[in-house]
Length: 176
Image (cartoon, rainbow, N blue to C red; front, side, top):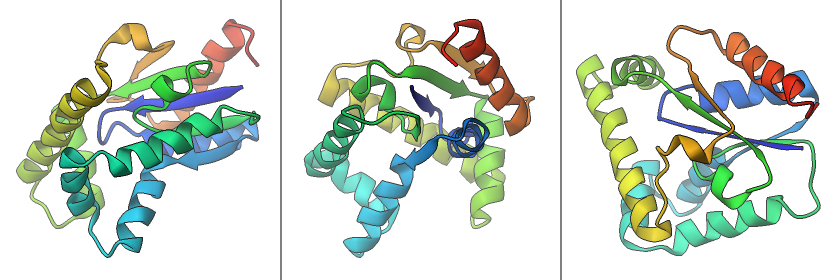
């Protein structure tokens, strides 16, 4: 079983994916962490790397190839990746969402260098830039609910509650 966790910036992807992996005893893989590692190795900030990726598909292809290889010969994984559902089609696909205001508040708490208003704008811009890039590069709509097995609005839920919703759905579908 491979479970992919996708969703909006600030919706709780990484936190939920880590907790879910621990709960199930699965390996946790974060593509966000991979992106940050590449940025650091190149002497760039993550935002600088994303701006380069908007114009040059080299880094996207590097990450894409990594994700495709995850599905070969691996099992019992929880993958935190916006495009994991696309590159690992046989996974159980979860999409996490919440309002722009909650996204901004969560981002504000994490980065502390932004005002709340700036954080809301930043989260919204990141989602729209990524959605546009995914449409142009892969011809996919990351917002299309048909891409996912389960969609959860995390706005009024604690991460543990989101994990329990996922586990419940997996048990209901007899996947665990």
